[in-house]
Image 1 (cartoon, one colour):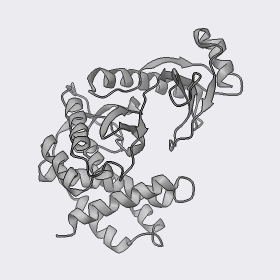
Image 2 (image 1 turned 45 degrees about the horizontal axis):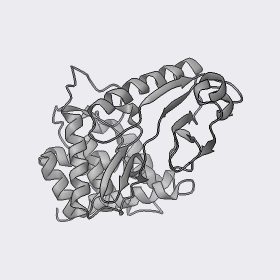
Image 3 (image 1 turned 45 degrees about the vertical axis):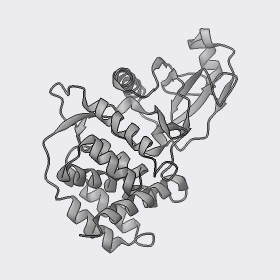
Image 4 (image 1 turned 60 degrees about the horizontal axis):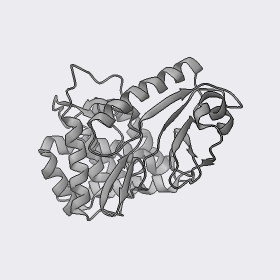
Length: 292
């Protein structure tokens, strides 16, 4: 299907091989375009979730604008949009074509002890923060807005995790974290700095994916990357380099908790790697708060 769409809508790429990539992504099916699936020329992203065609096309155009803005700021390579495709040949909605970014997907433990990796992550966050928010506000009730907007979701996740986690302990942790006062500081943020969206080579960060959500958010939101990917010593270096004071870090713990608590039960059968990420992040948060 993708080959036919390319030939019809992007004829300059007609005839290139197309390979479906196995990823942990939950929003898009990803297809490598080119003779070598390990280092393709391009990538086609086909949304997995159905929605109205006009709304989805508008969303893909919005994401493309955000991708360009992110790439212009980021010290780390990220995908650039090449075009939005139209439905056809069995795909009944818009899709996107973008550049390929090489690297290996990061894992929660792979570079957890690396000071160099911690510095790369901090420098990415600082570079994004260097952009003006230009009066932007956080829209809706997603991550990076008001913590207590997520009470019902966290309560549902805790209930569904009774047989999987130490729920009484985690309920107390959320009660503590959700009361973190707002700092009033917004920053330009990736908004989803999880391992699956970060690429590494050796001990360096070399790529950032899924940048279409780039926008203003609580300045603490992108700090979740330290809790997802770094062990305590490297995490302390990361925190120091970004200059996160106590309140901002506590809010980072809260945002990381809100994300992680949903991963464990929701992906337990369908994406075990995502479920394991939730567990490891919750462990790191609990470990930091234990002395209290």
